[in-house]
Length: 404
Image (cartoon, rainbow, N blue to C red):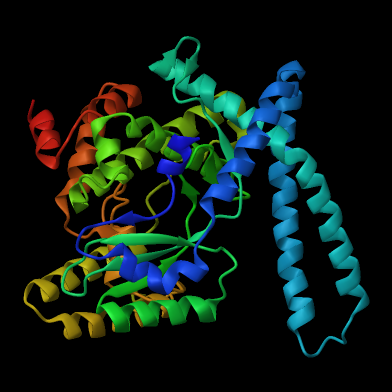
């Protein structure tokens, strides 16, 4: 329980006073202690019952499939319900809206029954994959795989204006309205002279870990493994330095997040191949060239990479206001291309730039992500990669290991 609470809450860099930030965020912060104690109680109950162990493999896999399918249907019905209740052309209350709401309630009740079963099955399946990879100690991976489907808190990310660097992040109530999010960003920026952005999260490395509900089993398996990797790293220098803020350098953060992302994708693919082979993603193929006379398709990662590189250049030259004006102009370009980014600022790049498991994107020209990817490619296995990078203290350690 002590470990679970250590892994939660806010992350801080000494450049920004957490007390000054929390004066503005305290009333909107997420209650990690209550969530963790509740989740631990549920996990103890699930472990004591052990009902999934008595089911045939086919029934276990069917539980996961039904949970994913019903989650998708519930999401579609809830989106439809929003349309029915917001459209002024539809009489209120409409019979369709009432019927739709009853169906949502029925499906959510069934999901509440399925959730602990689906969690247990996925935990055991991921544990088997981790054991096969070489993480078994006394018959199980350590730490044991444990997660809870949950509505995740939002996170407000703080970066200086004159350089892209995550100085702090504070987790917020998931029910925070958009108006309150915008007001909080404005208050932080006006009071502290920083760049702030409220962002959604997909998972958090508490214990049990928090995982966002999703209709994609590929994504779920990846996030479960991603957060397990953070828990694994916590007991070794790279993760301990990061989680306890003993080393808050951007390089260490990027090493952590990129390593966990690469590892999560490998575990997800292995799990799908073993238990859900029909859901294995089809390898991407090169898109056909645009017909003569037509513009090439919009490449989000390439465009975001170019944007980050230009912003870094402007900030290095001390042109902060010019960089912010440029980011807003580029945000409109992304919006017109179908990528609805609410705000594009230094905090956006500070948060998303740390996830550098693929070339390009928000990381820009930062060499750390590329170095981690090279170390991944040259490692004999995912387990070898994670076990070796876990004992690195600095980016220089990674560079030396890559040279060897």
